[in-house]
Amino acid sequence: MNRLYKFWSLPRREKQAFCEAGILLLLSNVLVRTIAFRYIECFLRSRWFDRASLDCDRIDEIRLVNISVARAANLLPWESLCLSRSIATFIMLRRRGIPAVLYAGVKFVEDFSLNAHAWVRTDCPVIEEGSENSAFTVVMKIGQ
Image (tube, rainbow, N blue to C red):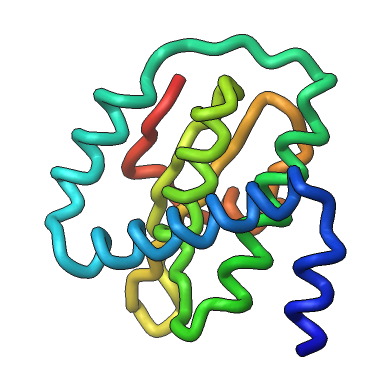
């Protein structure tokens, strides 16, 4: 009941972004688990490749997208992987005309296994996840 009260107390703009993030996370989770990634990559490249300009008064929208995706991912009954979160974030940012780049990278771990990670960056430092992404070697980049 507390979560429902929190949702209804949010401003309308945040409710809409939360619902959009939840739907996109659901779709991206299903797509990542059922469709080969080359088709998802082709769709993302063809649909959201146009160049947009970022003026730094859009930082509030970037923060709203990040918060909405994080909230929706925490409330969904399944675990949202970084690839699903990145796809949802990328689509939400590009729909708002904010230039975003989706990265996928890999790194070797001490036990000689391979770890993969996906993240999204914009020209503004708001969306940066920190220096942990610098340890990954970029193998794919969608966007500018």
